Image (cartoon, rainbow, N blue to C red):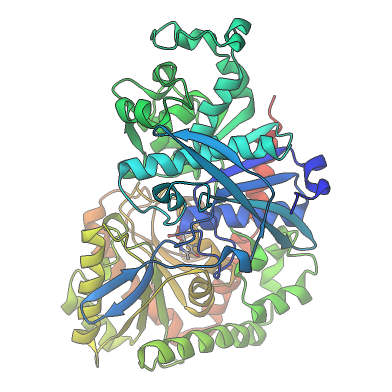
Length: 573
Ligand SMILES: *Cc1c(COP(=O)(O)O)cnc(C)c1O
């Protein structure tokens, strides 16, 4: 099909992202980065922003996870784009590794709150392609460095070409993480300062002079960049030799040295150098990012989550009665203190009941609805410390004996992350060991629908990263929208959201220092504050639930985040 004219005539902003979490059935996402893109897209649709979203189709998904006695087993997670999207009549050619790779696109029309935005999912599984290139857009974050380089070329260069081939008139390109930075490099090719170059004369092989032929200022005027992680592995680097071999016909690679760094090309640096506006994703992360990349102007726009996407229907109907317009204007939820105790408790009980039913169905373990449920779901990787709770088993069990509680965990490890997989193995083994004294389950295949159950049905949301490595984190915000308080280390968004004893509880020092002391603090908070309050002061607990909604939902919505991007980034002067 052709792209509907209504989109072409109005769209001015293109958002490029390696992954996007649109719905559980569309496996073109892996975790937080994709969900953030998905929530921003939902806000754009609901608020009527003139945006188009571009990502990879990822036909084989990220990871399908099952949990066995020894931990994670993973495989591909295929989905059928034709079930959720329309193929567009468009093809662009990308010269890659001496071959021509044809790129097509699927159109998913994302509807939300009465509005819609187009989402383009790039696909190289086309009959005109070489067998090895047909699989380029199959597996999200799969393959080796060369594969990743090619995928990022499809996203950035292919994305820029597809938008142009479809006749979108884009004024602002938003690069969601460094993965999309080749878009800026592709734009750079379109802005030569030397008109003679159009005649085909190229002295690109002469480093130092080459860059002067491009108008980087014009590219910066168009590009916005969001950096998402202080973890080194999150910043892709490619050898210039590999770039020349793979992309030498598509890009003026020697000219990129000025922007991508000497030695190897760092995608974050490329994006920083070619974007007129850069932001980190929480105030704490701004400090970290400025330390990582001194000399760059880095602003802060704190992440947010989409209101109606994450609020359980039972809680949503209470909100409807409280503030009819909360879906579009979640600021109105500041009145959450007016919610009736019984109604809120019952609505939460419904969400909790559904979670417990899911737990029983998938694991055979029965949780007691009268006891508190602590929820923890994260990508299973070292710095998130999923095992912090188990640091001192004697201490943990003594607390559980005095104040019984239950723990539900979930999360995928990247297939190549041995440490992450071992962590899951240890937690699963622990759940057997502790049975009878502390109920602990690990639910398989953390995805959008499981996240919705967990953030609404848990009683407390646990978060234990090593500061400052959690740039923002968003699942705690989703929990907050459901009145589920966080018990969290001070890092990322929680530095802004935590009012201790009011919107939840902090673990450790207020500045996030002394991570070694976090386990002891976690035990103390559970024993002295969280569990006794749940057990014996229903009124105080409900007050915390309401404060969690009333003080956090207004600030941490993706509508607020999107409006911040509009005023600070898209419409900047
Ligand atoms: C929200 C979400 C995440 C990100 O949560 P964090 O708090 O940033 O770790 C990851 N995966 C899924 C399925 C989610 O819904």
